[in-house]
Each structure stands twice: as C-alpha cells, then as structure tokens.
View 1 (cartoon, rainbow, N blue to C red):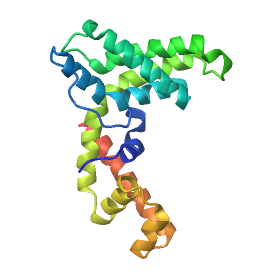
View 2 (view 1 turned 30 degrees about the vertical axis):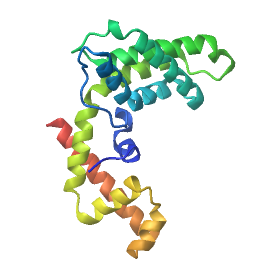
View 3 (view 1 turned 90 degrees about the vertical axis):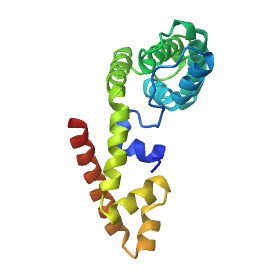
View 4 (view 1 turned 135 degrees about the vertical axis):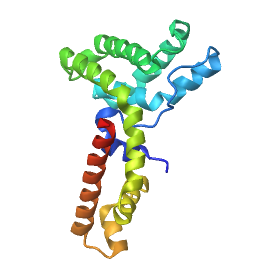
Length: 194
C-alpha cells in the first residue's frame, strides 16, 4: 500500500513525514545525483519549513538550496549520508535568508532554529525505518480501523462523510479513528524499539 503524505504526516510528523527514496548514496553520474536530489525534495522542503515558519520563504529557500546543492554536487562523497549533507546546505541557505530578508519579519530565535535543525538531523536517520513500520502496522490493524485510516488519510474524506457512509454517528467514527491511531502509534513504537 502506498502511503500518502497526509497519513505519513500524522504518524511521522516529528520524523519528517514524506516519502523519499531509501537510497542515500548516488552512483557517480550526474543523472543519479539529480535523481537522489529529486527524491529528497519533500524531506528537504519539510526541513526548511521547520526552520523558517514561513511557507513562501521556505519555497524560495528550497530553490536556492537546490541550486547550491547542484553547484556543490562534486563536493558530495558517494556512499555518505546525502540527507545530512543536503540538510547542512539548506541550513546555511536558511541562515542567509534570515540575514538578508528575515529582518522585516517575525523571527524565530536563532538558538531555537539551531535546536530545531539539530533535532531534525538526528531524527531523520530513523525516518525510513519508521515509515516501514507504519506500512506494516497499518496492515496489522483490524479491518474497520484500517478502512477508516485509509479513507481519512489516503482518500482525504472527512470524519462526517465516513460516519455517514458507515452508518455511524460522527462521534463514533471519531472514536474509531482515535483507536486506530492509538494502535498505530503503539505498533510503530514497538516495531522501532525492536
């Protein structure tokens, strides 16, 4: 089953909730580097967004980071952690943005930005494992719980629409959804711990 960004976001929000390629090391060709960079766009965008708290600025910074990453592609050593390397490049782009355009906006404290950056870099290493755990845990849910998770997060249906379709009251559907999320959270944590 393919997980949508919305479903991943619910359970993996602290761990950067978007699907990316599992490979973190390109071959030596520029095409493979470009593929690796393209596969990391959602994760890189989420990282930048977490540091800026400004949606428009984060899009602009992502573009600048992509340009810088492509210019510095020869500095990347195949076989090393591409995520960490690209996050470091993006971090410096965020700092540049803060110095130049950020003065006229409400700013996050620089120590907070550094703390967020460090935290995201640490937890991003377990992202793929947690995403795999989420997929297997969804498969283990009871049928009703799996159905409501899929309809709510994969199909984007509202709780009211799901409740009406299942012949439930909205409150009962919300409780079923809550139980399903609780079961997923427990399963993911148990799987990640083992």
